[in-house]
Amino acid sequence: TERSFIAIKPDGVARNLVGEIIARFERKGFVLVGLKQIVPTADLAKSHYAEHAERPFFGGLVSFITSGPVVAMVWEGKGVIAAARALIGATNPLASAPGTIRGDLAIDVGRNIIHGSDSVDSAKREIALWFAETELLATATPNPHIYEPRN
Ligand code: GTP
Ligand code: MG
Image (cartoon, rainbow, N blue to C red; front, side, top):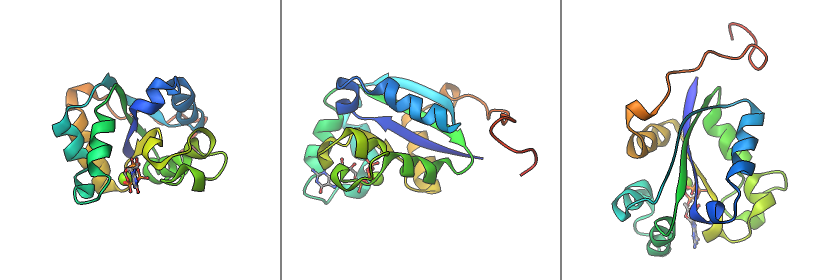
């Protein structure tokens, strides 16, 4: 099984989309193994988005992500990293398909309401950055209504 770091950004929280977004992951069948609401420090935001440090939008991205509460989550399940990216949709919400979170709920790239890890390595890095091991549940027993046995 697999884990992904998912964060509802300050715009998603301010727009009262937390329940809507969590419901989509729950309905898919993924398991929530970590959850907290925090206002990220600038250090945390810069480490989280370190790969974009040289981009022109970096300053705005860091100031936006630290501007209010973020709902930080770890979701678990088969293929969750790629599946969460598919549920989330393309970076630019106007290019995200209807049915995706960004496609249904957002317009501007700088207000795209949610983050999802883009690879196994970034998921591991981001989970360790945002959560202590003690804040995460143990791996869930697969629900037989969602998973066939032994695959
Ligand atoms: P995350 O899940 O947030 O990492 O989004 P992503 O993986 O779909 O996109 P990427 O990692 O390339 O960019 C990270 C974030 O930077 C995006 O979610 C946007 O909020 C922001 N961003 C990316 N490109 C632009 C841009 O061209 N302009 C602005 N203003 N923001 C951008
Ligand atoms: Mg990204």
